[in-house]
Amino acid sequence: MITTLLMIATILFLALQLEEKLKVPSPLGLIALSFVAHYGFQKIPVLTGDAEHFATLVIFLLPILLISDSLELKVADLKEHAYSLLYLAVVAVVLSVGMALSISGWLFADYNLSNAAVIVLFAMVLATDPVSVVSIFSKFELPHRLKILAEGESLLNDATALIVFVFVGLFAMGGGELGVTYLAEISSEVVFGSVAVGMVVGFIGLFLMKSTHNRIAEMMVLVITGYGAFEISEHFYTVLNMLGGHSHLHLSGILACIFATLTVNHVMTKAIDNDDKQLDKDQAELEREAQSRETSSGVIKNVLGRIKATYEEKERHLRTKEDVQLLAMVANTILFVAMAEMIDINLLWKYKTEILVMFLATTLIRGVMMGLFAWLANKTDKMVDISFRWWGVLTFAGIKGGLSIVMITMIPASFEYLEMFKAVVIGVIMLSTFIYSGVLIFIIGKNKERFRAEKLAEHH
Picture 1 (tube, helix red, strand yellow):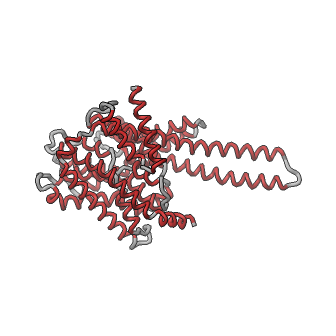
Picture 2 (cartoon, helix red, strand yellow):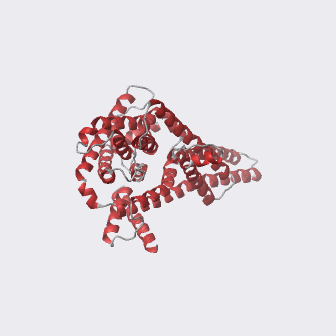
Picture 3 (cartoon, helix red, strand yellow):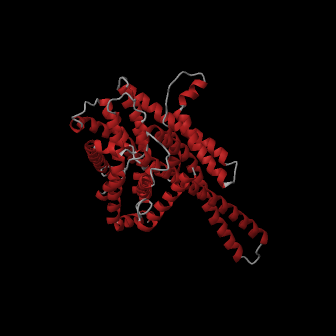
């Protein structure tokens, strides 16, 4: 275990050094270093031995990654860009699956894939990785609106992809009949139910947070809130059965975790904004008192006391977010080390043609979806205008992540193309991580002056 800890800590340290010194995004560094560690040191340490154990590890680490990313979102931004995020995180996923169905016969002519199998396969590779996107964006000066679109989509579309995968793909694969009524009912139940659970758990977390002024305890409340919302949603049918109901309703833990964290973060952000206003008032009062001929030591003492308390509370909230980000970085390192262990190079090479075809197809589909989004956005005042360089960023921000591998483990073992699906999904994850990241950095670097000017224009 000590060897494992040393390996993880060393990989994270070196990845951060590569990011700081050479501007290499941390996900790229983590993946590359994880492979070097795995194959260079006699394939040790071993965190997971197969896809099932890897999926268990991902589910364990996923909430902390969601919590960290959700803390970067603001309710005001979600309201301002609601239509854009609705398209990117929901409509684009649905349209992508529809487009995939229309070309699946051409893509996989050698395989007799049913429509349900096609939905399952493409849903797995439509889920994007917010960690990689946030890591790359943090190294550049980008317009706030562009960051909200890309980061918001990468965070929220995971829930949509998972809903399509479970309640459409797997449901149809198991013999269920798809219909408009079923799709409308299950979508509304899962989405609104997950959001409701997340907000309720979020308010409970706020109640607990008000009971402490300890920074570590505050961080623990955030962790409890996110994981609690995730677990309750994933096992919501158990809660219903305990209350006397008879249901197998399965909600989205991803959505619930996101909205629980958003609820807490919204109130925390408002508190920080109020702290800033209070500091301005106290500063003004001190200036007036300093200019007064009859300066009161009591007034100055009271004002200084308020400033100290306000500053300490603001600092505590900000450091809590930093602590959660540190936990997320460690979790992400563990995730990439485990991914290096479970990847079978021989299996990937066996299905190299299918992997390449799938990668090119998903890239083309995503480019078309982002092009359609740009066309719609530029036609209405309710969405932000999308330029060609913004289209490029949004297209190649679709880096895939570990959630896709979790979905693999949910496919029945009796499915005849399970091995091919596993190889294709892992292969697309690897290709998108390296190729998309490289293209994304190139696009941003080439247009960095324009992006900086757009960012300054937003401030003005």
